[in-house]
Image (cartoon, rainbow, N blue to C red; front, top):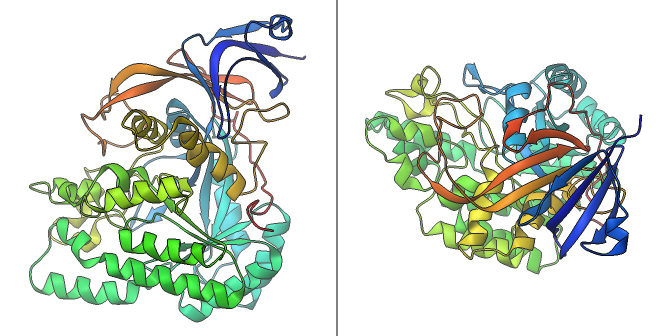
Length: 467
């Protein structure tokens, strides 16, 4: 059975255009666009009509950095693929790229199969995977080639977390050399974990146990040093590099310098670094634990440099690094020892709204909003133009967005499976009204109409920014 939907009267916004247009959707894809009020648009016929007058019609968000059900510090991220993808849809995101994890001593395939098992049949929206490489050896390197061929085209390594995910410079170089050959993209958590562990030990010995010390030991200079080192290792390997969750102005400067040298180096930041700061980590009592993530929140003055980096394209993507842990029973594992607080913040539901607020506040333009949240992540990770834009032939992943509605972010009203909001009480302008995933309504006028299992696995091609 063919199904058709027409969306009328909205302002269609992509990374490159803004146009008042009507849209015809057929069998899960965008079939045609025509300027509103023209004979071509009036000829569109469909069983389902959506009136978008006075609203934006935008591509569904692509969140290229999430951690559903991630094991960390003796517990698990509190969102499952079912709850996390449902919350993503509420926030206007229609595709996530989550991280499958290779455990030390295990193969990449075992890790990938485990993540497929967690996600399959449970997702409300489409999903894809990156692969965390924790154990670089000859077999792992061969497996990287196979994964690229089947659509897992990006590999994350950690300069942080010795004894867990950590790779040394030799292992990083070998993986980068392999990705230079097979077309994969290395994603780097750039912090000097060896040095940070020394500072953690010294802080705890001094009795500095509160959450705010998490930010003090994970120094901006150690993020910048690791970013610099990752860039130079990638240069030696002749490989591209994508640095995740950039939080420090000194790290932005390293990325800008590398890009000015013509290197294929890319950077991502996250809403928490744009809107939160060490003031949150220092909240009284144990409240600061809610804001413990790595890289850590920085002093407020770093925010201006991150916004600048997004405007100048030294940072290209805003993802969430959504990795929620409940305050009660999970974050509390670190009472009396900040190093035992599970690292991660909830945010998959908040990203599109916070970035729209940045448009309202004058930090970025509307088209740049769509570029950093939809189009660039889709291109970066080999899903464009199927995802990330509005054009004939693209998947009908569409958000009807009310730019004037006001909301207050709160754990009382969000849909993430976590007992607090990192943005509790924050007033924002703009709100998702209706969300289509491949033409099917997941959110209909602020009602959830989707279902687990609608979302399908999406193999990816290689990074589309490389020659």
